[in-house]
Image (tube, rainbow, N blue to C red; front, side):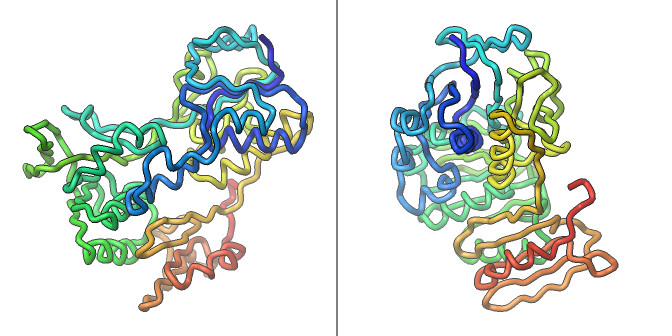
Length: 381
C-alpha cells in the first residue's frame, strides 16, 4: 500500500504535524503508524496526575478512531515498524509493508534508566502507557524515591508531595534544576519543597535497587541504604534513533535534520524529541510546534526553513511556578535578582548589559512575555 505522507509515531509532534498538514492540504493521503494505542492525550498533564487523583485513562482526550476520522488519517495503532528501506521508499511493519512519497520520523524519545542492578524495578512516567503500567502501585505507595532533580523530576516530586506521599529526591548534581536555574533560585524552590516535607539527597547516585518483601531497598554511592515503596526515575530522555540508524540515516545524539527538517535520506524527515535540530535536542513543546508548522509546508509543496526564537520554558510546580528563558544556568551571566513574598524577578545580562536570560516566578510570571521580546538571540539562531 502506498501513501503520499507516512508518519511513524503518534506523540505531540506527530499530531501537530497532521494538524498543520490538514491546514495546508485537506486531501493529501496521510498514514500514521505507531506502537501505542494512538489515543490522543496531553503529555504535560502527567506532571499533575497524582495530586488530581487521575488514572491513566482519564488523560485520554479523544479515541484513536475519532481522531483519525476528524483528521482524515489512515491510522495503524499497536503496529511496530521493523525496518525502513529508504531506496525503495518502503516501511516494513508488523501490519505489512507501506510505501511512501514522503516519510516522517516522529519516534520520540525513551526514558533513560541508570545502568545499575535492579533498574527493571524502577518506574518511568514518559507516556500515558508507562503511567498505566504503574498507576496502581504508585497510588498505593507511601514512600517514594524520585531519581532526578531536573525539570520533569522536580514537577513530579512536587505533585507526589501534594498527593500526600513521602517523597525523597536524589540527584548527582549539587542542587535542584541545576542545569536550568541560578543557584539562588534553585535554593528557593528547594526550600519550598523541603518546607512541604520533601527530602533531598544531592551529589549522590543510586547504585542498586533490590526487592525486600513488599518494599524496595535503594543503595546509594555514599553508602546510604533506604527502604521505599516505589522508585520513579526521571533522569532524562534518549532520542529513539534505532530505526533511522539502521536505515543508514545520519544520527548523532538525535536524527540529524537541516532547517527544512530533512534528514540525510531522500524524502525522509524528522521532528520532535527524536530530532537533532541545529545541533541540539529540544524536548519542549514550542520547537516541536514550530517544526511541525515548517515541515507541513515542506510536505505540501512549499519551501520553508525552521526559525526558532528564544523559548519560554514553564516549570509546572504549583507551589512555586516559574517561567524562564535564555540560558539561566550560564555562570558567566551577571544577575540582578529581586526576591519578595510575591516571587522572583531575575535578569541575567552579559558584560555590556544585554539581557540574555531571565527567571520570574509566582506573581511575576506575567512579566515573562514582555521580557522575552528583549532577550538578545544567540548568533546561531
